[in-house]
Image 1 (tube, rainbow, N blue to C red):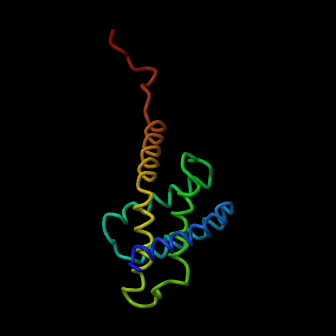
Image 2: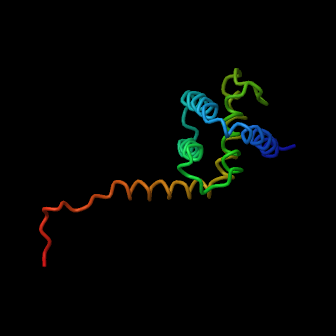
Image 3: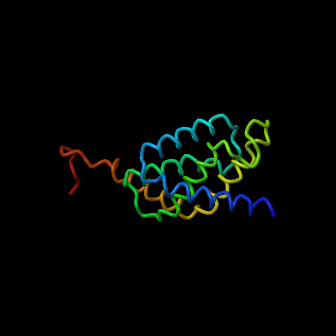
Length: 146
């Protein structure tokens, strides 16, 4: 079995676990914080890693019902990748220097790749929302030209 297939199986397995946990906001936040702490200790692994904060944000926005324009299956897939990251059961134990994080990063990369269109849509929604909220309106005392 090739590496990508193993990552797909792992992601699928952990996505199922994620579906059961998504209704527990406190548990979700606990796992997300652990995942952020774990990732903080890993040097930047490329362009894909720049989308990880967006993944965290999207899951949080979904859990708080701020952003619901996404399938629960997508959220479970992304959250499942984070569950795998913080899980002690890995294909390659994390205690093995350098190699120990390879499987974790592979699962995260797969989750990012599979959910890229949804992450892009969320990013556009968030940017649009930010622009709408911060858009300045002209002051009442400003003169308009006739």
